[in-house]
Length: 289
Image 1: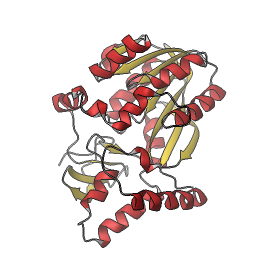
Image 2: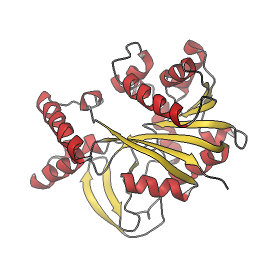
Image 3: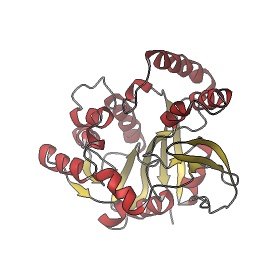
Image 4: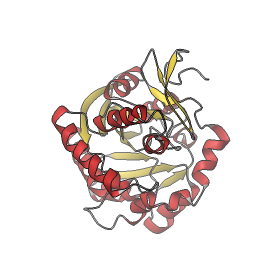
């Protein structure tokens, strides 16, 4: 088993064993990650699979026709707070997919660019939406120092094979005082905790439940504390941290029963009361060198 990809520690403990691999927690920095992170050529192949990009979750980003259907309300909420922290300027959307958020940001006055690993979705964004999208990684794009006033990662950081390296590159290309918006899963949410409790009560037989929480495309799973520690380490300061509902109906990549959807909605309501909701909006400002 590899050491922690975030802090390098060799100390970890297993959280669950599922068909897609073991999930572990670092005993030093507390980050949760896939014991065998999908990386390199395998990582690239995953995002060149056109069938993956045509699942309902990704197609919702493709269509982006109804402002009341996810991910559009989430995008709108993040964009509003982003503009409160930094006036519109140059914005880079890392992992921009079909470009739905870029279109929204552009309409709000931002000068937008995107980076997308999937050649299929990047081509759609360029040809159908006439957007400036680079096919590849943000490291490969090699933007100039201090070029962007804002950078967004919507459901991206959990997919990365080396978050530390990618965040350092993002920090380099951001202007002083620029804002980074990271939207990701809260590993310490009430929903995740209930899922682990049910998994243990089933004597590890409910593997299907864990595959919902630890989808094969996800390598890293952060809590408010671990994501804040990571961002501070690479040169950011936390400007704001907000939470959102799980809305598991959007997890249409794997079958989910109506009973499970109803149960998760109840847990979402309870999570609001104790501030342990499933999704996190992290806004971080680039600190002076």
